[in-house]
Length: 466
Ligand code: GDG
Image 1 (tube, rainbow, N blue to C red):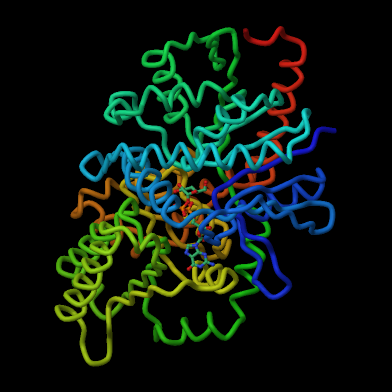
Image 2: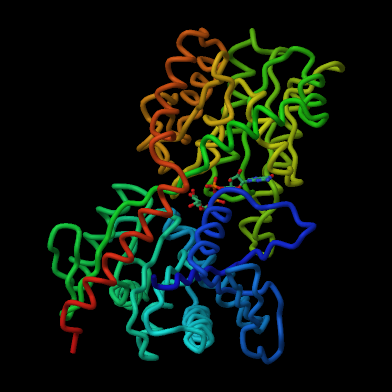
């Protein structure tokens, strides 16, 4: 069996003391353990002149961690990846900050990743590269002479070609994508847009879901990011008994909880969500004193001005909503910037009668899935979901769908969720749960790795490109 090598920008190496990260990290790590695999990425440390990647073994798997020069990291991560690609891929053209120098640094850091990784690769390794920070990595490995199978998975949306074209480097990034053997996307929509872009803008030919470019075949497909549905449900049920969760429930004093959980990011639609909540309180008076909205929003990418501005906006909105509606014995809004431990979060999601997931654009959105999995089957809550989250392709039948820009309609959806009968809640929840039982984080991992094996075999049988 070929060794699997996973590459991601950040790598979290479990220490005995650290709480295990959840979700996809766990399934990737479990897979690597079984495949005697290697996880390669940035160590989280800076060095003036970074040395070779440091390799540590943990049981049957290893980690190879690379330090980066701080100013390179700034250009690579904040400059291009999060200053240009992140807003572009989330359809926020007005926020795209293009600096040729940042793009060059992005390429340079990817080349550095590739050079360090190449030293550790065996010819028949299968490499699985993750996300928009590392698009050129496959092409850089090819330049160094690596001939094994390389797959790429995009966690964020891939927008339509008209949007991608705005980026001055769009053709180069297209060529970089065409160096992979397999490209995985979150949704049908992203898949369609990727195929269209690589065909119409980058000169690839299409054969079904396969692209052909200069004699090289690139398989593409939809591999929806998912959760450990049964595991998360168990965690939520168990966490319900913990003091943190009981304290939250007691603090509500019988009021209904609406909950939102996300990194503080402008793609998540938080100011509009707060505005919709304000509209709810102003127009559906029966909910005054009877509802509490808890927003958990751990700070992320605070180095970027847009993220700092978002934080200030939300602080102002929280103050405004509290000032306008609170009474001495009731505060309608709780806004928390500290991350909550995963177990506790699972319990909080179960307590909430309404889960608010209203991003302006999201590759998938795992919180939507976690909310569904966490519910009590006999008395489940209702998911209010943006039609622009990738999760809508699976949860659209059971959730209440909103366009987050439409504040009045989102407020109405909140009100309908709060007032929904138990029978309808159970019916909707079952329709949401079904796809999450059929497709889990494990299925996601197995499907991608299986396809990578398949393309590796096919590569061995075909003459290689000139
Ligand atoms: C990217 C794409 C795609 C959040 N706050 C806390 C906490 N979380 C956990 C959630 C969830 C994860 O972080 C967030 O995942 P999302 O999918 O919702 O969003 P992104 O971080 O933007 O992820 C996204 C994803 O990649 C996977 O492919 O779905 O579209 O943007 O698991 O629960 N966890 C804890 N405390 C918190 O305060 N413990």
